[in-house]
Length: 308
Image 1 (tube, rainbow, N blue to C red):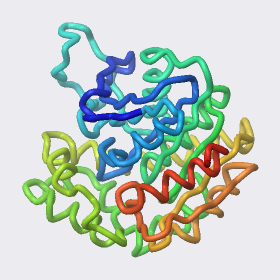
Image 2 (image 1 turned 90 degrees about the vertical axis):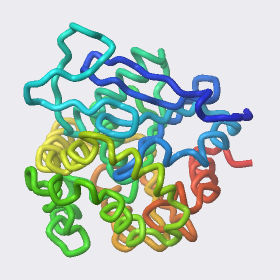
Image 3 (image 1 turned 120 degrees about the horizontal axis):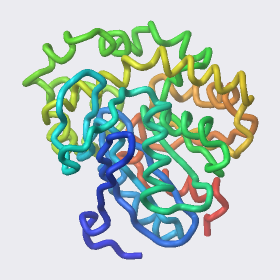
């Protein structure tokens, strides 16, 4: 499949959760591959891999999750969001990954009409959303891809959440102050993460991501992702307690140059799943879809028995 312009394969869904969700949808068939981006990125993170995955036979669906990119940024407090649904009273919501997983499920099954279980792959915050999806909708997922995330609800997260490596976890959880300090300095702040966590930081499309997070409410929504971590941990522990570990095949990914996640992906995987395959992406740090998209595609196809 040849995609001349990613704008040709984009759309918006108006979900019953109140979220207006932007997404890319490329390729055909029942083998859906859902790509969930991280913070501070958007679905544009997947720009280099959408076409190769579609050519490999997947229907590739890459949304901006709630709060990011061209999707809406809901909040639970009073106020009237601007939305084409006009006078309709929209559902309120926050940024627990359990809630965000429901958005993805509604997009896939109510809006796009999927009838078969999907392969759901996420990195960074997207990994947490993908993991929540796998636990919440066990019958609607056939494989999980995760990585580059300190997954709440695991012992690894409990050890690392107060470490200097993850200093931003606590900072982002403070109310109001992060927004105040970063306002007007989004590029400076976000560039710190692109540079610090990347092996090839110039591969990251900083301009595109900064434009996205300069929009009103975007950084607030990004920080709210972290403010939900305690509840996220409770949700994952509860899911493990009630239904046990995931039994689907799971692919754990890390960038070879990633600072902390290189050693964590296998530990996290075995805490949440019975069957785990771990692969490193050569020449990549945290931003593997930007830094080595070819390596990422090869790893996924090999794992899913689509390699030629």
